[in-house]
Amino acid sequence: MRYPVLVNMLTGGHTPIATVGELAEMGYKIVVAPIESLLVTARAIEALCRALAEEGRVDRLPPDRMATFAEVKQILGVERFVSVRDELKPER
Figure 1 (cartoon, rainbow, N blue to C red):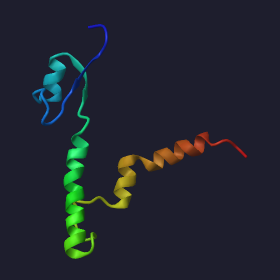
Figure 2 (figure 1 turned 90 degrees about the horizontal axis):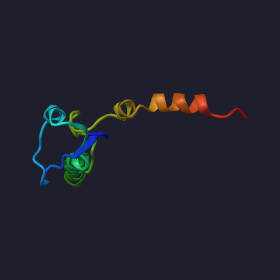
Figure 3 (figure 1 turned 180 degrees about the horizontal axis):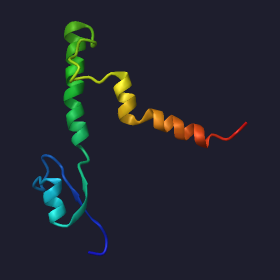
């Protein structure tokens, strides 16, 4: 193959699901799972809405079900983004 080959792993789709290792053995260099984050997020949103509807608050969700704001910033790499932004910011 002259170019990297991509495979689309879609839970519930037509392509049988294989591990990244198995796909690499088959010659795939790029593996995408385009909707899985949405599928996982849908359940989290459902739990959040249920807590709000039933308890009137959302701060009692278990820690494994909701990240803290600090954790989200760490996951997203906000400090690195701010650092790069500050390095590239033009002088005034």
